[in-house]
Image (cartoon, rainbow, N blue to C red):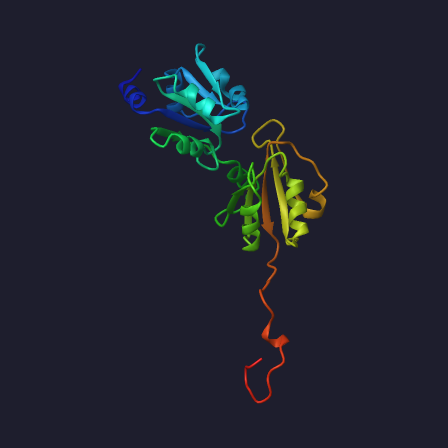
Length: 243
């Protein structure tokens, strides 16, 4: 083990490695070296299936599922760095934020990959410099509603198994936001990857693979206004601009 890696291991509590959905993970040489010198790993069940072939033969895996306090207690059993595998960018609605919230004093080093919304933009060659990203994954609709009220030109949405692309399309139609089209990326970077763009009415009746994210592109501005235009009022006689 090189001295540089030794120094890192003695000063870091957690390495968080972002990965895509590739059957063979894209891992940097630096992370591969750290993997060789780490024995405790963590992540979701799906992450383990993706990375187990590159882990040392003798290793411990702590699955991230169920209650977070139980997972943290397991982390506390070890006095050495733990490498956590996460989806995409760990600090984009990811496990990095959760870990910092529960363990604010922990020393963390992150190795991010593209988040799923970025990946979808790249695969569809969409300029995402004006992208507004929101998550309804285990959350309320409020962030998406605000983005729609502001008529954001491009909205990226992280979904879940209840707030699906079909549910999103239905909600937009219900509240009059029919000026958007929807692009859905399913199983991005995986063997069953699918990317399709739909009209909202069509999407409302479709089902998709559970692992997906959404892009909402505004087709035209609604030019909405609040209140009643002055022209709709009758002016008072001989009193200019008084209504």
